Length: 373
Image 1: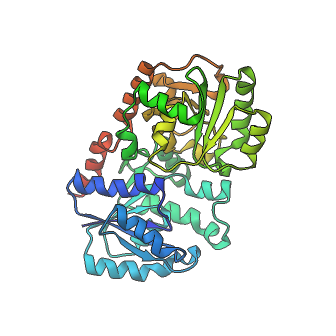
Image 2: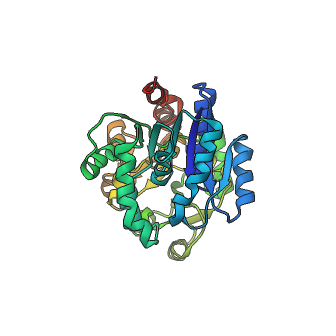
Image 3: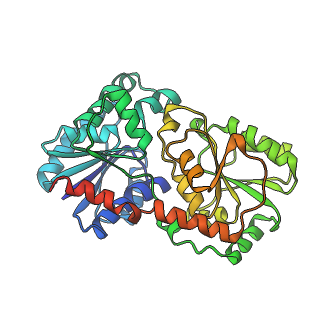
């Protein structure tokens, strides 16, 4: 049996696509015995546990010891679980999950590296606890260099490990953030586009630039604002659609550009249709170590919905992907252009399905599992 171990990750759309669906894929498609072990906060424990179990029955969901900086106190519970279930391998999603796994008696430990964690914590103040901040670099170094095998979300992340932690092995696979099933099953037609545009309240000649996701610090709203302002000024037919909670930044844009700024808070099942009804997906972030190694799932989602992506320089592997596949623009070079046709949208969607489904990375998953045979 394989344990897929998460620590302090709460259920969300990202958790569903990048954790729950990965565990399902390994179980059903690769026919491996695998079980999710999730340590989550006491806060709202019962409801969050139910959310996880409703999507992935049979998961082991455990309240973690209060205080993220007391993460080592959870080791006793994990060791007990290992003694009872006898896993042959633990895949740790995050540095701390992997650090816990490395202290068990299980010999096969895989570090599922989701980003440059030390850099992210320091660049964007993800964690404020002084103790954790003082030890995260050593813990990330241990996860990178002591694990039996590694998953990296981008080639840029592997290069970061080499430069920052002296990683010299070739014991890794690269698997980017992959699509949720709702994006894979989207039926993209002119009819579905028209229906959603009616719901949004725009006509078919309008050009919609869409931003989907968090407006957290590392998403770089100032850069986004500086890009979209001249686009909105250039034509009343240009609109921006935010798929997120409304905040003061959006309120100011609404005031400055009445009728051109739309904000919707949707349930996850609706998101693909609103993206597909748009024309350009915005993925504009500042240059930082965090963003340089990232694999934003929004990139895959935009492409799966047929959007051309307007992207920053040096964003993971994906700025180069955009240039190589002619599926968007670097934001500093973009000038308002014609709307993508339905044929172009379908071509872009095919590109996403070829590169960002879990099935597309089956060989890498098998390479990881076969490494230990």
